[in-house]
Image (cartoon, rainbow, N blue to C red; front, side, top):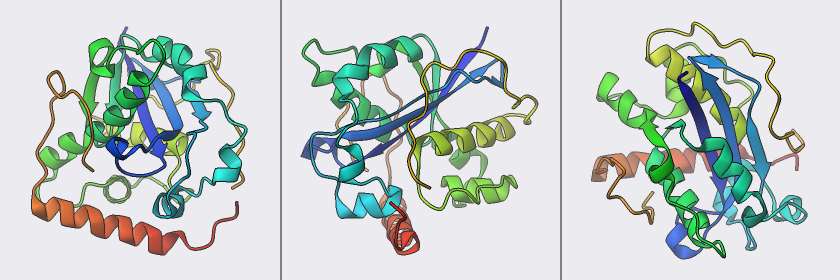
Length: 232
């Protein structure tokens, strides 16, 4: 059985080394390239304020997060869900850096994610497959004709579902995206609708040049401009 977990996070800001925290984790399970209904999704109280720039990207407010569980309350469930799987992440160093930071803050620190999971970075894959082109998630959706019209703002679970489609098409075709009848691990909460600190010894990272950094900053600015007024 080939078990893969497509994972995305939303955060209070860009730098875990500056005390920024995870506020949402969304995971979608693929078994033998088939999406199941066994997903894992939670909003998380970060115990700090969300930066204005980050709010403009994902629209998740401080007020909304006040009654959500802390990461420590969810850590055992999360680790049990991902253990032994291959994680599929777009720009993996960012998400892995934040996850490892959260795990390091536990009363009994958890293992670095790369010690219990294999990691596949779809951004690296896309750059190899489409050199010299834009390879953010929106650009890949356009290239592979995936409908991402619901993605007016970032959201971890929605982005994981979209990334699952992108990954399957990038790696040979979307042959099995129908849902199996497996039990859902966690119910989804209802929401109205980068440099990272990480032990890099076991994680393959690509160095980002000045041009890519500039493009990343320009993309974030574009997201902030497009976000406009949020409904929540």
